[in-house]
Picture 1 (tube, rainbow, N blue to C red):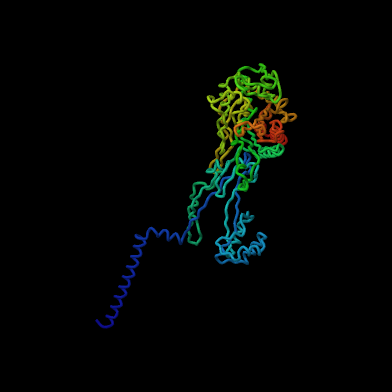
Picture 2 (cartoon, rainbow, N blue to C red):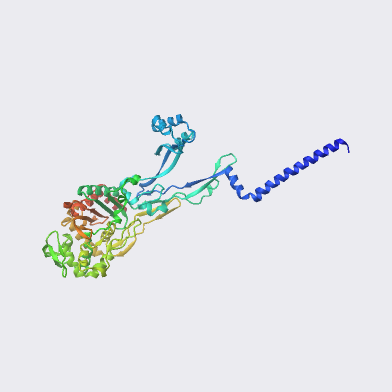
Length: 567
């Protein structure tokens, strides 16, 4: 071996040793990645090649029965600056001057001297061209944009108590929005993006989505035109009588569809927090009141079956003491002998008390319960009340007489409307419907089936009652509801409010229940007015004109013709 060979041999050993060293390092690193660090490898890799984004589908929309939008979604933006980081004041000023006519001094004042992470320049903006705004903002250093969806109610106060509203988090708080919150709400998912070979972000799983992100749309039984007629009539009626509130409902007596449901004072759901929470309440289903004379149709129906219509009732010239009690019943007009139909037409309390005594308290109680008093109707809305009627065993000596003319029991406008609907449809108590259809692109559920709870009267009896109620409007207590050339069947009610353990002599609930047209029933309308001015407290003075105004609008807008053509 010569000196040159030995020199090269040492170099080769060094190269081999270095190769072994680097190979060992690589093998150890590989071992760490594959065995020790395998749990963190995917996370570290994803951190450089992908990201996730929370997304939520849009909330479903609410429509009336004809597809008119009652609740939808609108995109809004907020524009803000993090003043703890660098920002281009000049460009920000120019942007707000061009797009929102904001004075540069105003914008500069908001930004100067502030060291906050969030300084809002302009909020709650409804952009005309959101893509252009986003593009402009992205080119301005320090200016940030938040995009979000907000519920929008185009009819404001008109149907707010039925439709309800959502809170800032997008969850329903009242009405349809609350009752069907889960159905309306869009689904939440995490959308995963990966960087493709050409450096673009792609969601490779999007094509495999097999479910819908957006919430389902709901079509109500409400007709927004009828809703407007009713709401405007209630507003006018409340103002005219200086009442505390007014409520009303229109139903289709043939299938139970709720065509309109409104109350005043109302609220605007687009800024619901500006209103007292009492205005959010749907009193058509949530307010119980003693109905007064509108309930007299039930004992009269019992009399038709039990004793016929030929018998005469002595109405005692307007004043009568209930036997074995010290309670005196009075009529607002004095009468002597009245037939059964005249008792209803002239709304004689004395006459109806005597009819109920002939029937007996068991039969009276059974009849009231048969018509649904004391039970919810089952409408798909939150906050429905049962109404009240005491158990038979707890009736006092005067309860039997009192319930016959609408005291010591309570109803809601909805319950009363279904009682009168049963008269209009030849004797069937129906379950009311507020929803017609729940729709999504993949599925649609129709609610067309008429739900009959029970038969409550015979066909012949329903016709006799309608004739009596028609006379009550044409010649009796409901004459302020009459319309020349049209026959309306209806009954007024005037009930003292039960306040602090006794019946008030100054506060009343005035009501009117009507079937229109009487000869071909298509609509049932019930109106109640809470605490009208004393000299206007009669149902014929306050409530009947409201129903009349609704029927006039129905006539003038050809709703009777349209109805006949589609049935």
